[in-house]
Image 1 (cartoon, helix red, strand yellow):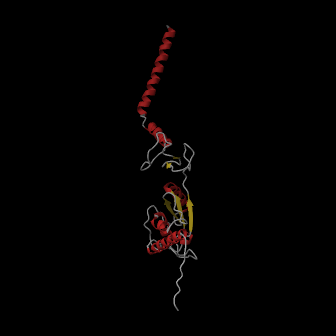
Image 2 (tube, rainbow, N blue to C red):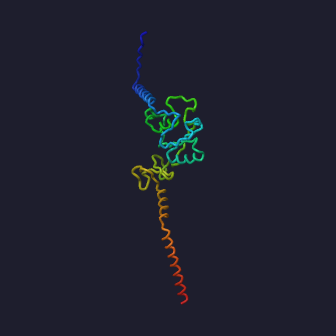
Image 3 (cartoon, one colour):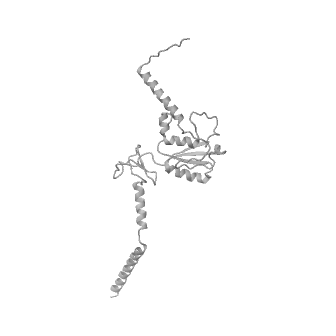
Length: 235
């Protein structure tokens, strides 16, 4: 039987869509070939991950992974988990806003370090359908947002905010007085925290010896004036 050749005519829009699907299909196959999948056994060497003691064991179905919004929320999560023990609770801080995987391309998933780390922490494998969670490192997932304000303390508007490392206050860099030209490197404290630190430092820098001598001198001066007044009254 001779094969039948079917010619499909499509407009430019449909042709572009088909080309887009072809690229996505190739990226998806390339992603499956890369070794980014996780597994249940073995220890993980992921920066800032606080692993639960019973993760990746026979008791992993009782374990919970807490994903926090930055290091500030991680500190709070660690203090909470320390009260119940770290046997069943792991903590991992996220950097910035997490990628929306529903709208992301396979290439974005491959290049996003946070998504790849989460896959490894849970032991997820691409393309696998899970009937149960026995093959995963964790059974529960908990999200813990940071305690930072979502609006600038000066203008009450959102956007790209600079967060203080000592309190929940946030600012636009151009709302500060004086305004900043760029995001500072390292740890940054807001004007309120800097003022508080300067006040405490000023109190600590006071010399108790000189302070006592000043008080004592004032007392002698007052006593001398009182004695002089009595002499004038007698005379």
